[in-house]
Each structure stands twice: as structure tokens, then as C-alpha cells.
Image (tube, rainbow, N blue to C red; front, side, top):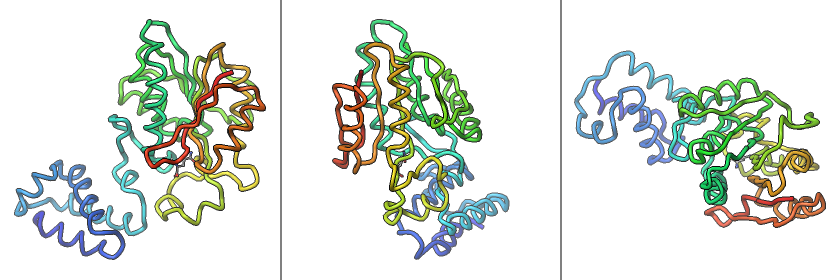
Length: 285
Ligand code: GLN
């Protein structure tokens, strides 16, 4: 079979399930991974014969795409903040809005870290390690730790730290049960689960059926559960002038701001993402 025949078959197998541009994009991603050919090389070599083995790989991918599995899990990797990350069903796929959170933190910290002072950072609920690792890469004077409830996620996060050549200390911890944190930090950051059950109606099958529930959902009754636990711990474990950063549910900014005020945090700043939605919060004690 040649590339042009493979592509034709692939499009036919997925038509009706995804928009045609998305099918085209899946084909490019899989070709890059399985055939080691760029989009341009694919377009220039329609007659190129592909191996039986590569064909089988495409067929397995088609089955998984028919099952609405995210393409990132199928190829086992994604990109975040311009860096490569391994992902699997135990880790949330890093989102663009989380890149904005990282950008926000870096822009706030860069002027401080320039004077060569070492800053300590903790990422709570690190998942694939994307926040911790992107910060480690971009804030050279930082010492970063990260925790997660999932041993499987930590396994991937450790691989990602090695892949990106940075050191992050990972700890297996359930933040809802933790009485204290390992030490004091200049910065605590978290993108905890914040999607309420009632919001599931608006979500896509690929997220609902394949991404880890424990990384995403909270009950409608107590959606700020993780923010309460983390802000309590941050009160004891932030250094003087230390900062707390959160990714937040766009509908819960007001409620969370109120809560943080009651807890004694100041200079609470809500920041919108590129879609104009309240997505990040920064504060200090
Ligand atoms: N922004 C993610 C989503 O909408 C949710 C991330 C989270 O719960 N922390 O899928």
C-alpha cells in the first residue's frame, strides 16, 4: 500500500466521526510518528510504499480514534510550552490555558530570580509534570518540588523531567489528607480538579471517557474543596512575601476570591485567559 491509498482509507474510516480538517491533522500527526515523515514529505511522496507494520499501526490508531480516544494518548506524547511531554490515561493532557498560567508565573518571577536568589516552588497535583517542568526550564534559579495523588502520573512526570533535562523532586501525596508540606516555599502553584458535575454536559467524549476523573472533577456541592485544602496549607508553608497561584474554574472566581480574603490572603488578582474567561488567580499573605 502507498501513502495516498493509506490516506484515502484513513479518511474514509473516520469520516462522519470528526471534521475533515481534524482527520487531516490526525493523519499528519500519525505519519510523523509512525512513518517519520513531515506533512510536506507526505504531500510530496504519495506513491511511497509503506510497510505492513506501519499499516497495522495506523489501523490500531483508527480503532482508538473511533472510540474517541485523544490523539495525544494514542501517540503517547504532546507539547506544552514548547517542550515535549509524555502522556497517558493517568495524566490529564496539558491544556493551553495552563500554558498561560505558566507564562503568568514566569513573567512575575523572572525579575525576582534574575538577582540570582534561589526560589523554592511547589506544584500541587502535577499530573504529567507540565507546570513544574516548564517552570524549571524557564526559571533557572528555582528549586522545584511537585506532588500528586497518582503514582502512575508521577511515573510519567519523572520521565518528563528526565526528557526535558530538569530536576524536580516528586512526592506521592494526597493533598486532601496532608497535614503539612515538606518545607517552606516562595511560590505554590496548583491546577487542581475544578470541573463540576453539572458542567459535564458541555464536555466532549474524548475528555469524559478517557481523561483521568480524579484530575478533573469535583462535586457540585463543594467545588472549591481543593482550593480550601491548598490555601490552608499555603498559609503555613509560604515564606514571607511568598505567592500562591491557581488555575481556576471560570465560573468560580468570585467565590474563590471571597474565600481567599477570609483566609487572610491579599493582593488577590484574577486574570483572564485568551478567551476572556477568568482562569488564573494570584495572591499572597
Ligand atoms: N481546563 C480543564 C478542562 O476544561 C480542567 C482542568 C482542571 O480540572 N484542573 O478540561
